[in-house]
Length: 228
Image 1 (spheres, rainbow, N blue to C red):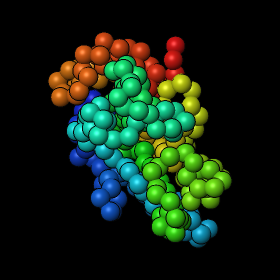
Image 2: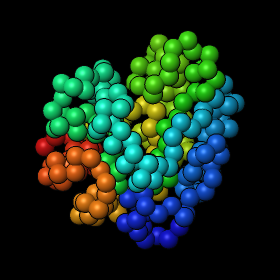
Image 3: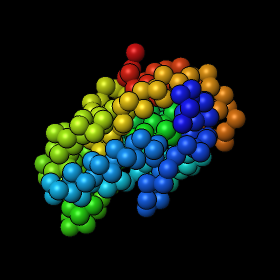
Image 4: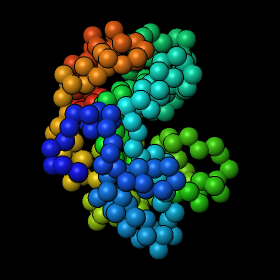
């Protein structure tokens, strides 16, 4: 991949540098190597570390966003509690979506550097339904051992949790890990103006309210700096 990152790449509109990570997942080649090495150590330690989600394109993120805007998927608050869709204003709906799902063009999953992981064996043995919520990675959940293992081992392989804490933007996501050395280059390439252009040209629902609030949304949710 060239050292200079194109805006189409960080926006999720161009992905020709990605490699097949198996099972329908795609990653940056450097990240794919690191993931495989980390999976091998996890396996030796009795953890079945597998990918839930990796690269997602702009169009895929757009479909997720629009589905939630239409009320076709559950919306939750930052603590994971289900919200009543019919009781939300458009602004509340937008905030609820962005707490858990990024704007198309604003997702770290566009880069091939970030992935969501779970313990496949433990989840299959678990009696509850798996929804990728924080409780599943706490002491009573099927992925608690994985969460602890990541805390102790992921740095060795170059990974960290970009959403380790809820700072008033994106909710805490203990399953989301990022390959820091490559992801940092994408972070530097981001631009609010380029994101605005991409959203303007898209078929995103709620476009007027999103573009009207984009400067604050960009800081709070895309850069994850919380409310100013």
